[in-house]
Length: 352
Image 1 (spheres, one colour):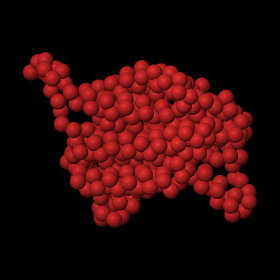
Image 2 (cartoon, rainbow, N blue to C red):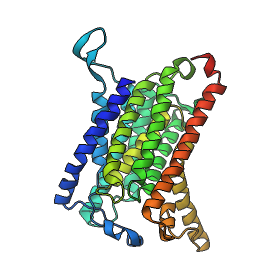
Image 3 (cartoon, one colour):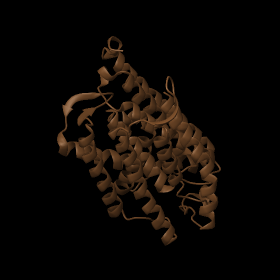
Image 4 (cartoon, helix red, strand yellow):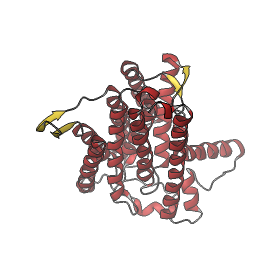
């Protein structure tokens, strides 16, 4: 429990104090956001510093690693002691950093071209494919279950090929879903904090019930989730409306990759559809809009993703953000509730 608190607190402190430094650096180098002309209410955001996701990744990484050091041990006294890192948590950290690298390349390309167009879809997908392939290989080495799962494995073995396909789909779909959602101040940072909080609870609960879940290394996965939670909350301080900095594709890809990795590492693959329901809703709105416009020449929404639809209807941006946070919170609550209900119904009470 102490390691969870330390991980979250350290990453929070680092990000809360490092972000203003990043803002000054980005402004000095004219690294700002390029805004879509279609969104009239967002024109004032042109030039706001972006690529803030770098701070989130650095803060979360440092917080995770430092949480494994103890200065004082009960019964032993003062002395620096290090705790081992689990392969699964390191794998989750790789997904965070790997997907962030792809997002950073996209952000840097936009900056170099001075327009809101980064990497081509081909290059972005190629990068995501490499990260997914390495994650799938690492998962096999770390003993991650390759069974299809909801709140825990179903007993349906996917095998290496199908599991790789699932990893590729989850990492890319979640990263892109979070990226689509990242269009309003603090929307992703706030909703992601809720999602990471749920995975802190899920992974910690699995570590407390090893016989029932059999997920070795779950506690360290919870420590990683706590680190990203702390970093997301601290970044939200500066990213809340009116935003002083944006996370950019660096941050949205990193957060999406980490969320998908946590779902895979905690054997809650299909449960992610509910816990990350806000990102699913945003992605589906884009898919429906494209199908409707290309197939029938009509738009379902005034603009997609759906949070822009409500802005176009005249809702203040802050109203959209808070209400979408509420939606995310409800989905997270339902997801965690289903996870706990599965434990109760699965004779978890008989195996505390």
